[in-house]
Image (cartoon, rainbow, N blue to C red; front, side, top):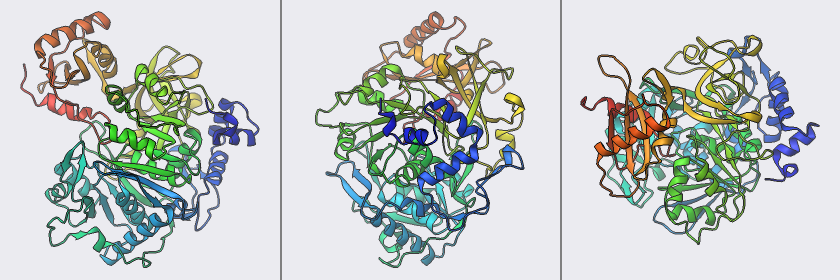
Length: 608
């Protein structure tokens, strides 16, 4: 446990005269304007023009406006701590040493990129896509786009050209920033080729490995795109609700939802970093992620606004090289995804990886396992707590989390995020009791919550058909399933849309997978359901990764054993119609399982 009195959260509670955390959280949702005013002050958010109030909710919770009338550019809040402090510590796979970029150097590079946008004819409001790994140039371009008043269109670098093309079109991106190639897991990824295949209008290409690729006539190398040193663009203030970043959430329909972030959304990122992750000035924060997923922008803002440095590793974070980088960079807070922890645990931990600087882990992306996290918490030779943290792109951070002033128990959440609350309801819209699970509904408003979508009806997706909350308050749909535990704790059970109906009984993918991995021949497993094209009951399909690399598995025999496990441990009506052996499960750059990809694959296979 941290010394509560020395944490950001503990100090704020003491200043507010509240020694009990639950009382402090209750205050943060009952007096939301007062809480966010305090948070904005502690974060030192910079405004070009102040508004008249913190919150205007006269139009109801769904249409609440935060900081109406304010003008700002959130990038100014990223550089308050002085130009000489470290802003980025970085390492590229296959190279040696840890590079360092100061805040002053990063701000100058962002200004030069912003100047390059103007020199090449881009204007405020134009879309600029980032389709690249999380590296120094990526962060500088991200901040430079927003500094200039343009919009970042975030695209995961793992996406195919077709998926990238869809997002370029939805975001109306006039140009793309990318890299010629990069190394990931020892394999060269030729990203510029994917940009060309996606039909991007114009590309700015970083040669991270010394390459000088042959570019299309309309494309330009990174160094030629930048404005000359000392001649970068000035910061452009704008209305606080102006769109700065378009991110995409896959949802369940197959059409990505375009979720806009504004200058206000990063305040939520930074607040979560300050209170729930106890990020201080001078800290070093690492979180293997990508600019195409919300944790990429989250990392930028949660680090820089709080005066911390971010540690960026360009490559696969599953091997010994990354584990050494964490120690060499002096990382104090490390974000993880459960599948990453399983990968680290499966191999001997390098003896020369010094993680003694670590004060805290944070976990997000998918439900975690107790054994993996007990192993993680004991790694540095002392108890290092894990903060469970879960949210969404349309939240700008977390809705459920842990804190450094409460006991850390592997796989368990302890609280709703500050400034926000939720209820867990059963199928009849009634609150569930401890020991039962249900679907999460948020209680708006909060800074960070989306108020519109660029290609879908925001009200229909998040509000239409929601049951009333306690006292008749408006609820907002989120879609996670949560198990309520005694003592006000919670455990994640995956997405509500990962729930399937097998033999008339609803069951989550996670429940099935937890049983199936007990078979010693299974290293990883993903359970998905598909419906026959002509209708009928759902069909369970299992994707299995062998426990041993290169092991030969008899899929038919394993399916028989798997069905026996499901029948014995869960329900005799549960059985897999098909089992598919794969070398690896499809994941995002931040290691989140891509279930939709598996459903598509299972649904396109011939019926058996």
